[in-house]
Structure formats: structure tokens, C-alpha cells
Length: 401
Image (cartoon, rainbow, N blue to C red; front, side, top):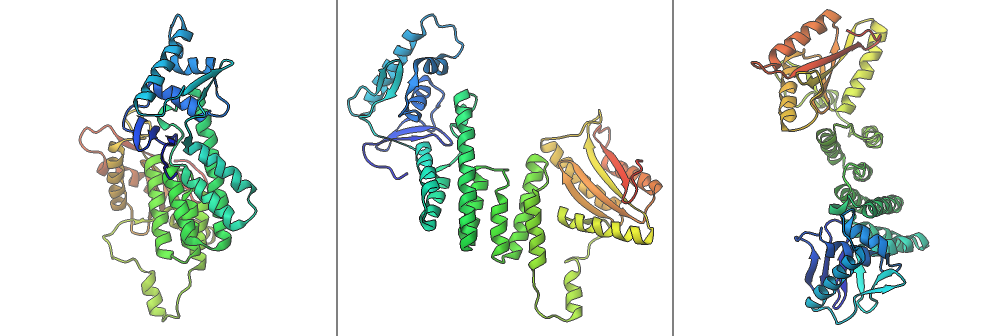
């Protein structure tokens, strides 16, 4: 919102603040968890319908044992009026009570980011012109700059509103993406996806960015973005990328075209960029999936054996180690140990936090046990009680080891 003179500006998304003619009245770097802030948040957000006395008292005093809550609330409101007058707001009543309902005065205009988002959302729903509708959806998206009153998420009314505004934001992003896709405006579509993922992380908005990169033919950027997103989800949440994101990567592979090239040059492009020391082939999840599916077909035809092994870092009680810098360091060390321990024809994938998948070719159950002992011997240091737990199954049959 572009600030105008003599308007009270209220920020509800992200960190709460109130400002008047460039002067901060509440929130910002200061604590917003004060009775004054709680009072102003409720009144300014519910400017039209007002707030019942009982709701104000519940938010201001909670379950505290106060003998006369009505008197205590009148004291809070009196002090709030004094504070507002002291920051050079025009002389007014500020907070009015009518029939047991408290209202913010109509004499002081208010501009609230949450209210602006709702206005743009309603207008976009009614707008028939596609160009103007797209502008409204995008403006609404950029009104949402974070969770509604993110530091007060423990309050019931705040949690309810936060959920509602999050849903509105998601609708705005989806509707804007549809229009941008129809216009083939992949520059704005990419920007929208990156903004949505930044404001509301780990909600699969990366798929919007990925689609824009794939559709505009930016193959290298799309691959790098996919790898970066996969790593982020694994490191922060221990999750795989969404089906939508993986489908877009496969679509990228399907549409890549090449110039007419001599066979020797094609073969050279297929080789690894660098010849490495003997050891396993470390690859991303989509590559691992493709290799697994191909090996499964080969095994069905030739009768050769192949095994899938899941290696999980566990504590002294056998429970998976789930979080922290220690897990990151252990995970990196385990990766190095696995690559050293398997053969050059074996495939390695980081599946999740502290978890790796191995695809072991032309091997037996006894070979798998030997490999486990080799990994343990290299991974455990001194009296370290952290270890590795193994699950092993045949690629074709399902006998547990």
C-alpha cells in the first residue's frame, strides 16, 4: 500500500505494526505482545463490525484472576487513548463503545493490509476483463507478506484468521498462475512461483516456478532448480519433492531436442563429466527411479539378482536420528562411506534425512551382509554409539534379510 498523509497504516501480515505519517506507533522492532497492541489489533482488524466486550476481555486478560475485568478494561482503553493522543493523532475519542460493542472511530481513516487483500480478492472474483483480473490477482498476492500476526499464533482468533488468509493467498496464486499460463507469460509466472514459495515455504509453489522454466525452454535452470528444491525439502523436512514437481522434470526430459550430431559426440555427451575413483554412482531421485525401473526389467529377463538397500542413521537405541547439525555431519560422512564401500556399478541416492538408498547389481544376500559389515566398519568411529540400520529386499521378490 502506498502511504498517504493522515491515514493510520496497519500491518497484520508478518510482524505487526501501526504507523501514522511515517511514525511507528506500535509493533515493528518493538514487542507487539502488549495489551495496547492486542487491543489495537482487534479493533482495527474488526473496524466495521466492532468487538464485543467479552471478546476484548478474553484477549486482554485471558484466564488471569482479575476481580473486576470491566474496570481493568476501561483502564486499558483510557491508557490507549492517552498514548494515541501523545503520538499526534488528531484529537478524537479513538475507541467508541455502542451497545456493549467497541469500535474504532470513523474520524481516523485506516488502511490495513489484510483488509486490502480481501478487497482485491473480492474484486478479482467479480472482474470479467482478463487483463484487469490478472492485475487484481497479482496485487492481492503481493499484499500477503507473511502469516497473519505471526507472533501471536497462539491466540484463537489469530489462528483462525491466519488459516483463512492463507487459503485466500493460495487461491490468488493459483488463479494468477492459470491466467499467466494462458498468456504464456512465463517471466511473470516464474516470479510468482518464487514469491509464493518465499512467503509460504514448503507448500509446493516451486512447481509454478518449475513449470515456467520448463515451458520457456530454460532446461539447465530447470534442472538446477529441481535439484536445489529437492535438497531443500530433504534437509528441512526430510520429504521427497511432490509428484507435480517430478512430473515437470520428466516433461523436461521428454521435450529436450538436440541438433544433428555424430554418434561419437553423442556417446561422449552420455559419459560422466569426470572419471572418478572406483565407487558407487550418486544420483538424484528421478535418475534413481529410472535406473531402478530399468534394472527391474533387466532382472526379469536375464534372471540376474539385484537388491535394494535402505540405510538409516540410528542412535544407540535403534531410533532414527531426525534433526540437527549432528545429523547433517553424520549424513555427509555416511554418503562418503557408502560411495567407498559399494562397487562402481552400484547406485546411491540420498532419500531423506539420514537415509540413503542403494541399488546393488549382480549380488547375493550374503554379499549384502558383507557390504553392511564393511559400511559399519568404516562408519563407526571409536566408541561412537551412532550406527546404521539396514532394510534389504530383492528387486523382484520380497524376502527380508
